[in-house]
Length: 258
Ligand SMILES: [Zn+2]
Image 1: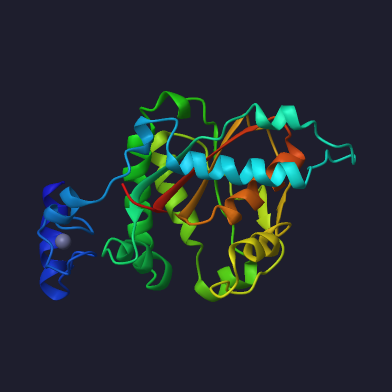
Image 2: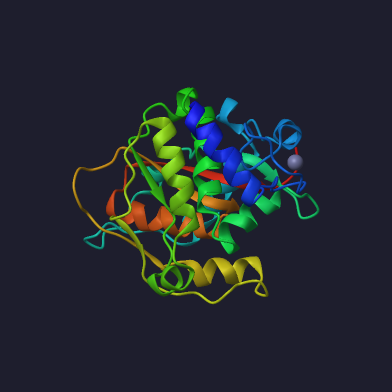
């Protein structure tokens, strides 16, 4: 860090001390968002080291299950041959395991509910720096955040997934696109519906539009991977426009255990 920035931060810390998102301890000058202890103890997934991991298995399971029941079609109404879709195993990667009893969930809460967009970019960069050395992500040419419906974005003032995507795209040196995938349908807060109902509700909520060059490998970015329903709905919207594009997934949190 440059000397003037250290002085500036020291002064700012004096006025309004920054605290660790996980343990709440006062942060030192060189620490950002997490204290060194919590940074070291972060339950990292190491999914970036393995093209085959539990998150990729989960999303590929969701994709296959739905393709078997619900064939997507080409823009002209023709059915897309199943084989063309299944040949593309989707890669997936998350930064850390998100557990209900763990304090690392505060990273996502602080981004989603407290306007801490800087944390989104910071941890997005951390994830991007891990992914950039993975061979299976080497040909990613487009980063797209999972979009919010405009009314929700307007109410919150920002899209949390977009801030993570900014960090990821910067660290990987890949173009970020926020002008080709849109959320057209607003779905109600879905805490009380079951998994199948949630998937049905969100399906058809997204729309992909053709604009500029055709991507060959898209990385979809969101804050948290739970059931994969939202990511699948985006996947399908993209595949309807670009049937043979490869689509991979990246989130900060993955609901699961090491
Ligand atoms: Zn801490």
